[in-house]
Image (tube, rainbow, N blue to C red; front, top):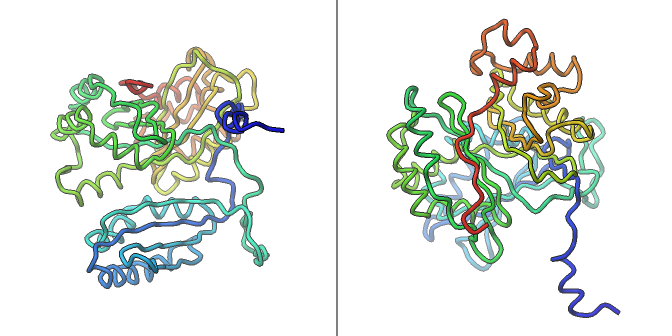
Length: 384
């Protein structure tokens, strides 16, 4: 018979799976849930804004249906659910400038929102579409590692890179514990030319962690210090302006895989892959396929990889045994010549700073040098 102590201690001592693979590219349908807290008295205005938005979303490729619900207990609480053929078309839309502009009329009615995205694993009473071309349902539940990954990206004025790097490198990390269930684990900052990428790892609730970080005095001081250098002006004192800035800066994780090996001495690096216009999702998908294959290669120096993508910006965060340059082909995740050729066809050589011959040569060392981001800081939180 299992004792109370054994039942309580079980989850805390359970071993996490060694190999982890999380991806938006499994082809299954997606259910999006948006919880909305509307200002009292703004319900009709919110409904009209939703109906206008709904008419526009209906024509977005990949959109299947949506539904609006109002709480029977609190008229300020609303629920919007939508269904999409798969995750990529939804992410392409929700991360687009078009979406930023579409939702602006709603923002003045809304006190708070919370967005949840799910692959559909099982459902009853519905047959799979015969000609949908999609997997319809996720085949099996994924097993994660208890960590949520997210990133932000923005550009600074050319010529200000050194000043910005110094500001970003010198701040003190915020406290790790957000609340009883959420913990900020690690923050890594990189630059490629005038582009800044900040990645964070969180245990628990991502939104709570982001709000916690934004309120920390040391973080607020850094944000204020870099304001004059930003290419896109922002006023963090204006809630609407801040919301739009961070919506545009969001760089979601679309794929994560680990090899299953312990990597206590792994070094964190990042690679920047700007895609040709309109090909960012295709490039992220290719990198995900290559990383899945590399994770099965015991000789691959990359033991952990996360791909972030928004529009034509793709960033690959890797934890590497030894030096990236030691095995540039495997460090890039390239499995064969065909995939290497496809990678080159999707990259925007001008954006990455490559001269035509350097990129077209397909030389792995040259491509690795072009894509490599400069590490500014990589810190675990103060009490992690």
